[in-house]
Length: 343
Image (cartoon, rainbow, N blue to C red; front, side, top):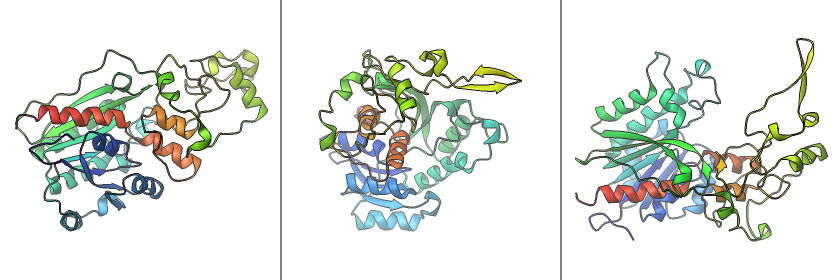
């Protein structure tokens, strides 16, 4: 078990979702004191998989200094060493029109994150979000990256950030995420090094031997016309690989034209490559003519095979899509121990 000054490190997480961030830190030897999220389905999943941890189900805006101190006192915790979390990213992703979403209140939730950090005063803070945050600005045309770093510095933290390519950190998908790392300690901030090995889909899906013995394995039944198209998609291919007669047509300016689609539409994975970013969209299995089950999505997200998600099929898919890949979180957790080994 990894330790710091002969004591297990205590972690508090916010915007916890299903607990992907928490799981990575737990695997690295940290103690997850409590998590927080306002989505009931995710809260249920967290409680099921982290029975030893407390969970605050509710809006972070409603969490008070008194309530946090009460939780720590009841659990015999004198100090939170690290706070982790990923404020909602939907408002920053390129899939949304930034001009229409500058007033999205979720853009400001990082300020609530900083507020609870001020209360807990941890030695380290880790914050995750989509890479597109780096190019987003608020309604006053101020870059969010500068606003975030400024808030942390005003609170007494040194802060740095990096875009992570998750396929180089043991996660078999091309997921781009920005990680902010902040500390009050007088140390140089750095990040774990990338591996030269690219993690591939096939190495993970082969871990699943029998879907019948696992939870979250519901298979989506496809209509005949959908199944026909799925069968025509090669490994690594998508909608654009379909014969012309199977592509969607629409009338535009009096002409019949073929509709263009995003790269995730009718996307089939390849066993020899990383997956694209796992989202709430359907993804075709690399060798079978069906969409991935949620269990398979979770495996590609590096959740362990025995991790159980609660809720309906769509709820589970969204929990997986929202989560920080546990393997990425574990890499970061171990690196924090490394850079702080000479306090």
